[in-house]
Length: 82
Image (tube, rainbow, N blue to C red):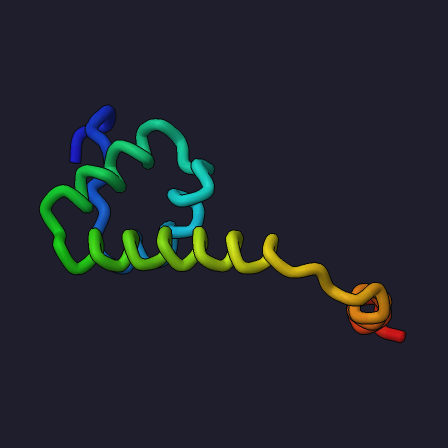
């Protein structure tokens, strides 16, 4: 690979970086390489689409319901280790 040539991703790279991609947290170069890989790798493209839909569904479902204040307090205690 030449010095200025973008890195080619393989499927394991996609697996590791799919959440960064969906959160728009990849550099422009990485984003381009990621999308290039998706353009010719159907299994990775399907995986990314599944993760995208799952993320959207979780966001939608989590905003539909309100949770009791006691649950929030219990979670804070668990996180703080008390």
